[in-house]
Image 1 (cartoon, rainbow, N blue to C red):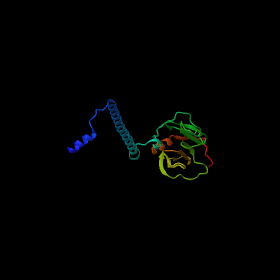
Image 2: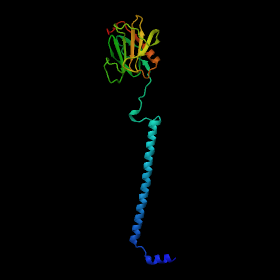
Image 3: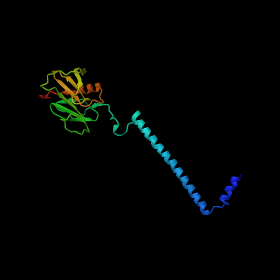
Image 4: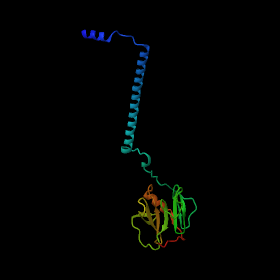
Length: 211
């Protein structure tokens, strides 16, 4: 108690705080409260951002979610429909893939392309279908998977220049092979290719190329 008495004497008599001092204390208290609330809100926001980052990381690395240009292109299944347009001169056709059209051709070739194809030249076959006959200078017999195409011998093999393209060779009654080259067969089944080729008919006036 002697210590308490000494401290009281040193401190002197207690004084009532002034109104200005009370207002200053209240202002400091309010500022401190606002700082604490801001810190809590900032912490909650940072946590939400971190959680979102984790979710995106998981989605792109461990789940089926893909973002931006990394999304794989969708392969659309081919659907063959009856062809109702003007028939070309060297070949006539019964069916085309839905959304495709005859782009052009002559007595020796026929080019079929998507209606919205960027390249409109019938002599450029990328992303299109080419129909022609084996050239006069080519006396080889096609090799590959043996198929029946409407009662005619057929051979299916890989097209040159494209890892997703196929050639279907169909032997005609005169011994000449007709070539159906599909640049991109993604979305095509083997039966689709056979059905499409079965609807192609070589006309008497067709011309064989020299090379």
